[in-house]
Image (cartoon, rainbow, N blue to C red; front, side, top):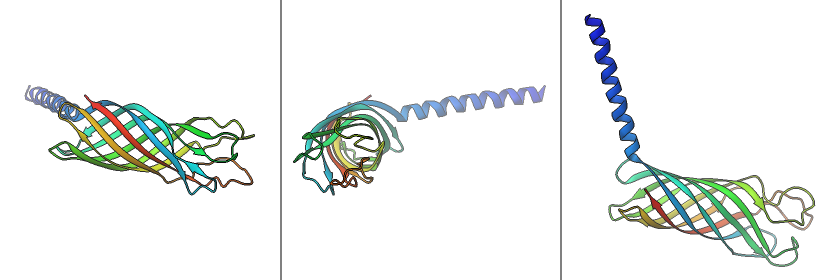
Length: 195
């Protein structure tokens, strides 16, 4: 009888602990929506480029480690590229559409101002270069480093500015007059709401 009571007590206490643990974890987990503008270009290109205006939009997940420190992961559809000067690809605007996933460490002050930094992985969805005879304009994966600053109100609304520097080469083509080892460079301005 004592063994049954002990087993029942252990099961009850472990059930209560697991419920409070899960509840505590869920209180630290927040979801949100984000959208904004991209101002992108290519660096280290051997052809003339100018910045191109694009956009990004998607969802985010924020997990509070402490009151001021959080980990934030985003899932964004992002339009990037550049305006190309000259007849390099047969068109002026080069647009590459990615699904980007930044994984950021975010520090928020008590006043709501935050800084963030971390890696980003982008997966190419589509590009608009029809003049290439074989292959794609951009590689399937784009690796970057991101850093930003912004403000988040207590109600969850916020605004942010971020710079995303490409770490991997963008080009996935072979042309005699173009070196494909250029990298992406993106400045982002966003508005967001975290529930």
